[in-house]
Image (cartoon, rainbow, N blue to C red; front, side, top):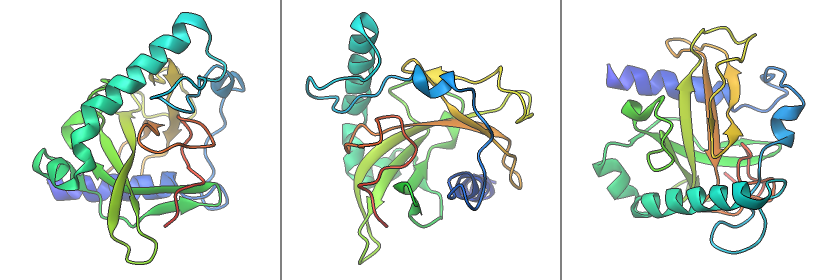
Amino acid sequence: MFRTFVAALGAALSLSLAPASAVADPPRAPAHQADAPVASDVSGGSGIGSAVGPRRDDVRRQLAAARAATGRFRDLRVALDEGYAPMGQSCLHSPEGGMGRHYIKPEFVGLLDPLRPTILVYDVDPDSKTTRDLVALEWVKWDEDQDVSTDDDRPSLFGVPFDGPFERVEDMPARYDLHAWVWKHNPSGTFARWNPTVTC
């Protein structure tokens, strides 16, 4: 059953992460991105975009805590030992950039805890295709009403609304997800789905 779940989630993510030309994302309210703070560097003082004052500082602290809590997973063997499993798909990429290879801990689906991400994302050596470095964290939550035409159940974390909802695929329910690039700088923004500096 676990393998079926992981395979279904892998298939669902592969489709939901495909380039827009292959699978169109559902439309989003224009304010969705405008309110999202963007951190260019969690360890240093360079800005968190449109977030101001205490909110920016809170987001920076939360991202730093998420980074500290997941530091041990820079060693992939530790992630595997602690229950993260490969999702079976190759490194994900699109015209907007790459994402990497995903490792999931199914019991964390729906858990909106900055210190316990659902998925760990690693970049891949483009030549050898081997998994290299931890680059991002991802949180996944099922769409409560399973109706992708509505988003009144859209979750948020770090004060940022999740992407989605994404269509149901095979045995995988419709879902929302959120990436945080806390281990590799993303010029597109800390919470962007794709990173132009990641290649597959």
